[in-house]
Image 1 (cartoon, one colour):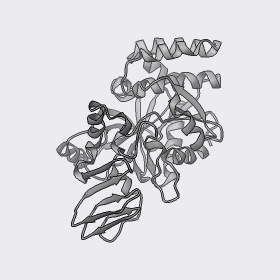
Image 2: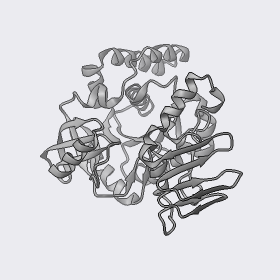
Image 3: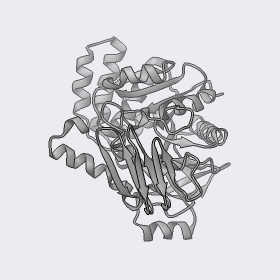
Length: 356
C-alpha cells in the first residue's frame, strides 16, 4: 500500500457511444458490465482502494452526478467540477484540490471511471511501479497496454529508452490511427496502447501546466487561493469556465519531455468504448452471440442483442448490435459501433433532448 498516494477518478463523461442506455442523466460509468450488477465506477474504486488505502480515493465530476456518486461509491471524496472542460482542466482542478486537502505534494493516480480490467493484481502492480517512478523523479507516467491487434480506437505510445523495470521514456504519442497505420505499429513493435491512466506528483503536473498551458495554470493558482482561504465557490466556477477545453494528451503530454510509460503486463484491459467491447465481458453462446433479456438469436453469428421490456428476435444476422432501452432502439453493424455517438449529435440537432 502506498501511503502518500491518492487516486483521482475522472467520472464526468457521458459515454455517447453507449447510447441509448448511456444518457446525460445516467452516463456510461454508472452502468453495469458484469453479471453481478457492479457498475463501472464501483469496479474502478474497489480495485484501487487496496493500492492507496481507504479514504484516499477522490472522484471528480459535475455536481449533477453527486447523487449517483453517493449511491455508487459512498466511500470516496467528491470533487465538484463546475462544468465539462475536457481532461486537462479536470486533472488540473483535481491536482489543486489534492494539494490543498493533503497539505503536501501527493502522488496522484489518475484513472477514468469507465474501464474494465480482468487481472486486478497486475493492474495494481503496474500502478505501483508508476507510483515509485513518480515519487522518485519529476516525471509524468502513463500506463501502456501491450497491443494485441491493430485497434483504431486507441491512441498509441512509441517507447524510447528503457529505464528500470518495465519503464521506458516516451518517444512520442500518436493519436488514433487508421487500420493500415495501426497494423504498422503492431508489426514494428515498440508501441503501447495509451490507456488514459496516469501517475505523477501534484507539483510535477502543475509545473507542466505552467509550461504548456500557462493561462490554465494562472487560473488554477487563483482557485488554490480560494480553496485555501475558503473563499467564494462561485468564483471557482467563473474561473473554470474560462479554461481551454483540451485533453491532457493534446495540451500537455504530447509536448512534455519528461514522460515515462510503464509497459504493463497484459491485465485484460478494455476502455469499454463500444457495445461490442461491452459484450466481451460476458459469456457468449456457441455462435458468438450475446443475448440479454427477452431475446432470441436464430441462425445469427457474432451479434449483440439486449432487450428491455419486449421480445427481440434476430434471425439470419451477422455482426449486428441491437440495443433496446425502452424509449429507443439502436441497430448498428459491429463495423460501425464507434459511430453510435453520431446518433447523439443528430438528436441534438433535432432538439430531441429527452433522448440524450
